Amino acid sequence: MTQPRKLRLWWLWWLMGWVLIVGTVNEELQPRVWKAVEIFSNDKAMHCTGYFLLTVWFSGVVRRSRYLVMGASLIAFGGALEIAQGLMHIGRTADWFDFLANSVGVALGLAAASLGLGNWMLWLEKLVRARKA
Image (cartoon, rainbow, N blue to C red; front, top):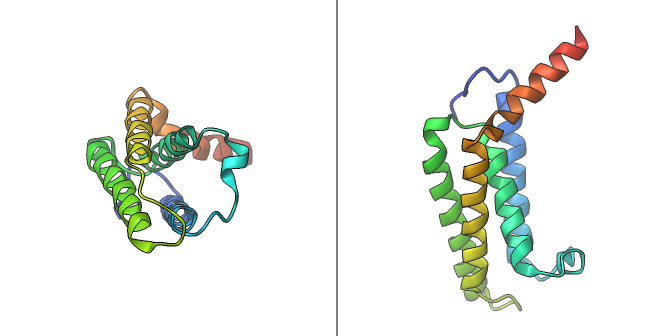
């Protein structure tokens, strides 16, 4: 974990990002815990949105030069979770359309980050710092 840009709370952002990863693993590998499908009527939209948000989150922490590595890592993460779902036999099944939706979410997140949204953590820290002054 290297400190990107000039984030003052980079360690907190990374920690919160890993909490999101653990939450994603929990949600995808447990039998339906939160009944998220009731909130989102479209499972694929939920997958796409979740991975979009993960990508935007981590784009705020990593350097722009590492966006592709981060994106590939998130796509591999989504694929590994789909494989794990298929192997666990607990009522979850591997769905390669979920993997596709995850990958589309990552691609959209990378596009948004590349267009400027990747600096959101810096903006937030500057805003909080300005309000304290």
